[in-house]
Amino acid sequence: MTVKRRMLGIGGTVLIAVMVFSETGRGQVGHNTSVLNPNLAGEAEMSALPPITAEAARAIVEGRPYLAMSEFHAVVSAHVSETELEAVFSRLFLPLNLNDVTEAEILMIPGVGSRMAHEFEEYRPYRGLAEFRREIGKYVDDEEVSRLEQFVFVPIDLNTASDEAILSIPGVGDRMLHEFKEYRPYRAIAEFRREIGKYVDDDELARLERYVVVN
Image (cartoon, rainbow, N blue to C red; front, side, top):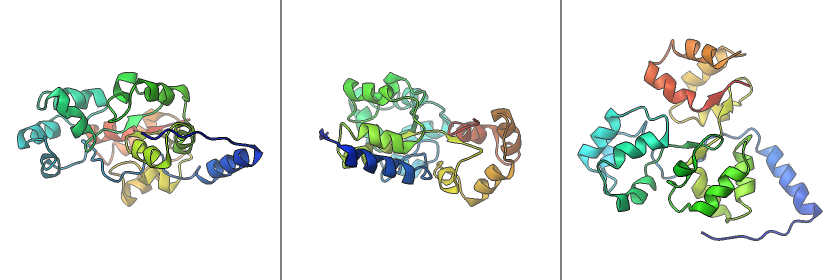
């Protein structure tokens, strides 16, 4: 993990403000390059990741949906050793809600120790991933920020989220994007459950609800 030191004058402050403004419409689930989602990955994909066996992959699928990383940890730890967990979580991880995740779950992110867990919590509540990138970018370089954002998300506001933000939710495509927008404005999360529940089963509804709020 590379630590950065930044010295910002007036010009640097203006640059950050412009960057945050330009990123407000970007997706709120971290850009993913290599980490599979245990709620969506297939058995074959997961069993191809050492030390996940076919039996472990089957158990993971049977335990879906996972609504907290602690739930996923409980299933995986029954099939791999404690020393192998970091290798598993570097490739297979349930995105964490930055605004309500526990410190214990933050520490499950590979390479994150107690100091960085403190920084994750320090800047709550996050209004979007641009804020996460800016604040955590004070401590690590851009490459490490990009790696870390694969493991996190900030819930989107159902009534104001851009198409891109909605489509950043794992497993959401154009059809579900249309349904999310069809029932705006939502007055409460119960309305989201009722309307989107017309199209998906209870497990999928619970999985999707992790990523949204009604403000």
